[in-house]
Amino acid sequence: MPAALRVYRRTPPITSERTQVSGLLTEHPYDALIRCAMHDDALQAFTLGCSALHKWSGFSNFSQDVCRGRAEVIRKTLLSRLERERGHRGRVRAQRILSSIDPGCDNPAEAALTWVVRALCPYEVSTQYELTEGGRRFFADIAIPHCKLIIEFDGIEKLGSTQGEFDRAKRSWVQREQALQDQGWRFLRVNWMDFKDWEALRSRISHAIGVASKPIPARFALLWEPPSERCDGEGRRFRGHESHWPNGTDGGIQVPVKNG
Image (cartoon, rainbow, N blue to C red; front, side, top):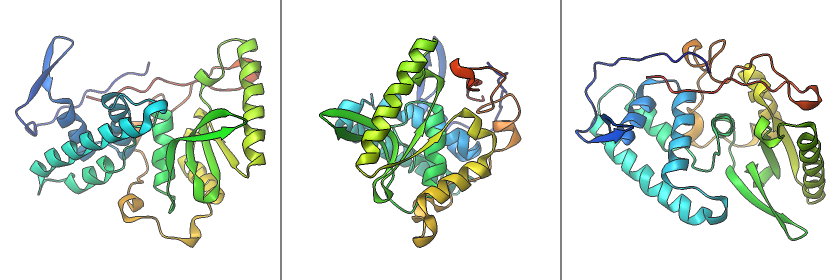
C-alpha cells in the first residue's frame, strides 16, 4: 500500500452532524465527500464518490432499479448539503462531480474509467449494463448503446490467482465476447497499465466512440482535468509496480487510499 498523505484544512465542517467511525468521532461521511469534491482532484473525488454511492445504496446488479433509486435520494441529499457552501470556492466543481458519480462502479478502477468515458462521450453511458445471449445474463462494466460499444476494465480479480483460473477466465471472455460481437457489439478493454498514460487512454476511447458528431452534455463537459502529481504520482493511485499475472501479463497495482 502506498504511503498516505495527511491533509489539514482550516475550513469548518459543512454541518454540525457527527458520526462514529471505528470508535472515532468524525464529521458526517456526506460532508467529507462534499469537501473532497470541492477541494481534491476530480479523479480522487469521482472515484471516492462512486465507491461511497455504491456502498450507501447497497448496489446489486440484480436489483439495479431499486439501488439506483436509493442512490438518487442520496445524491439529492448531497447536493442539498452542498448548497450550504454557496459562494465558496469549489462549490460549482463539486456540484458537477456529485451530479456525475455512478453507484454502478464496482471498484476505483471502474470508477476512474467511467470518469474518463463520461468526460468524452456525447451519448448515454450505462454502468453494469445487462445483456443476454442464449438465456445467459451478462453485465458490461460500461456500455454505450448508441455505439454498441462495451468498455471493460480487466482487473486481476477477474483473472484469478492460478494458471487454471486464468485459463478458465480467458475462455469465458472469448466465448462471451464472441457471442456479443455476433449481436453487433464492439469491445474496448482497459487494464491498470493504461492508467499510466491518461491522454493515450482518452485518445483510444475517443476513437472508439467517434465523438466528433455531437457535443458532450453540459453536465459532463468540464468533468475532466489531468490528475495532479499528488493524486496520481509515481507509486500512488493507479500507478503499477513490477508484478506479473499468470501467462506473463503485467497487472501489478497499488491499492488506492484516500488522502486525509
